[in-house]
Amino acid sequence: MELPSDVREALLREAKSWILQNYGGRKRKLCEWNDHYTHLVSIRSTSLDGDRDKNRGRLIKLAQEGVIIERPRSYNGQMRSFTLPKCEIERIGQEAIEHWQRKGYVIGVMMDAIQEGPGDE
Image (cartoon, rainbow, N blue to C red; front, side, top):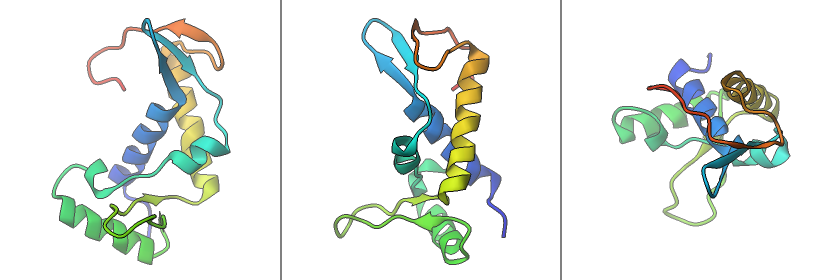
């Protein structure tokens, strides 16, 4: 089975939010992708549009089929989270970097926040 587009987009949104760091005074810095971010990027049933219970069921089914990986929970009652194999998450991380570079950000350089249009993330 193939990764559904909405799951992929949720993972990409998550990756984009992690690598563009916010600092005081509307400063931002695009970070280089590394294992730290590979470990952080995951999604939950609330990351997807629609019914949370149905989304959780979809994510569990994808994990059972080996499309995504369920992360271990650190305590009972913690919300389930899911990710992709490392090579696929790294591919998504590179897409996230390319997205921000197209907007004008440079890896490792502190910059003023770039004004984005409606719908941009």
